Length: 200
Image (cartoon, rainbow, N blue to C red; front, top):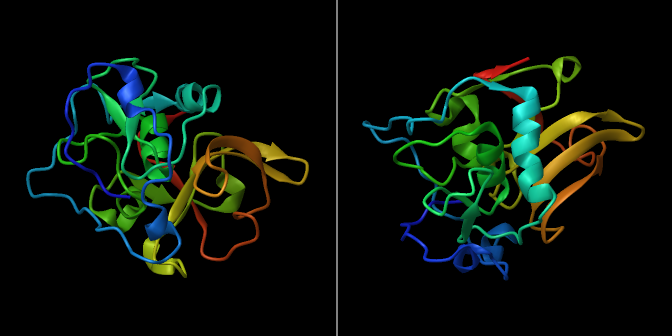
């Protein structure tokens, strides 16, 4: 769940992940290095601005409707459809894309640690289960995971059997929309959060 140096792609297909790079980290064999905000971290112009819940879900659906393979090391375009704006193809890259959160020291998306209120970027806050609305997210920090690797998903409303989750999932092979039980398939240490700039 780390960012890597980017080169400008000549074609979109260069960034369509076909494998499961970073899978060793997910299985607990290795833990990726966590990025923390630099002292000069600044929002990328045009991002980190107020965004409606409908727009968050619309942005997420750009990948749900055209699924990407899961990868911590590969990147692809988002709803901007601009090859100079790429998002990391893992869970936190997906959520960052959906809420349109980019910083100059993390341009392809934040991590599970830095999406968290304690992550240093101060872009989210804790909410209760009863407060959950589409566009909020449910997150497990790396430190709370048995493997040392966290996970984050988008909440998209309550449904029979749980809630509709939009996520970039290693286990599912990539982007998916499905029903999950709360908080996340009955696993512990997942908690609901809200992006500070989301508006109804």
